[in-house]
Amino acid sequence: MNHTYVENEYYDGADFRQNRLAKGEYEKCTFRNCQLAGCDLNEIIFVECWFQDCDFSMAKLSGASFRDAKFKQCKLLGLRFDECNPLLLSFSFHSCVLNFSSFYKLKIKGTTFKDCKLQEVDFVEADLTNVLFENCDLTMASFENTTLTGADFCTASNFSIDPEKNKVKKAKFSMPGVVGLLDKYDIVIE
Image (cartoon, rainbow, N blue to C red; front, side):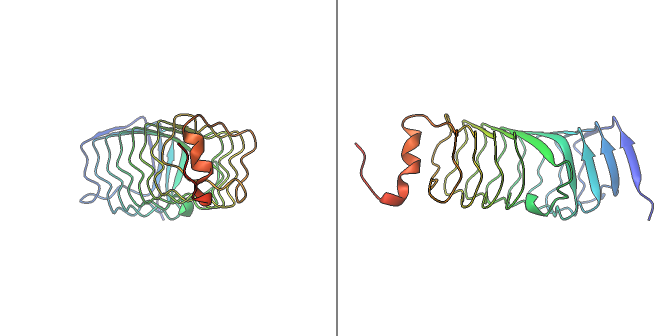
């Protein structure tokens, strides 16, 4: 099969639901205001790509690769990042909505989530060592057997983490957010 190689391309307002993004490798490309909702991104490799104001909701990520990809103000609802190619997987998210997405069992050490909505996101068995959750809403996000060593939750909100079921050594919390570590006890803190 013939694969495309694209470098330093700028896509603005492209609707890839209509004109499918060609399988191949995209390096240092910029995608702005692009529509990728529901698209099949299998066998597509994004290296050092920038995504701004794009909609990826319910895109199929099985076999897709993201290497040093940056997402800003993107809609990423219901994405199965756990189905991406794990080789060199790395990305950062700024002002994105990632509700209902899954990072199940992924090793995403040092990832930055800044000003993101991460409601009902699956982080079960993921390695989140040194991950930054800056001003993030983690309502009903799932953490179980998750490595949170050195993770920063100082400005995160609405998380519920059981320290007995997760590795939280050297993780950072602030008051009153630390209350999210006591949820399982159903106690009242005044």
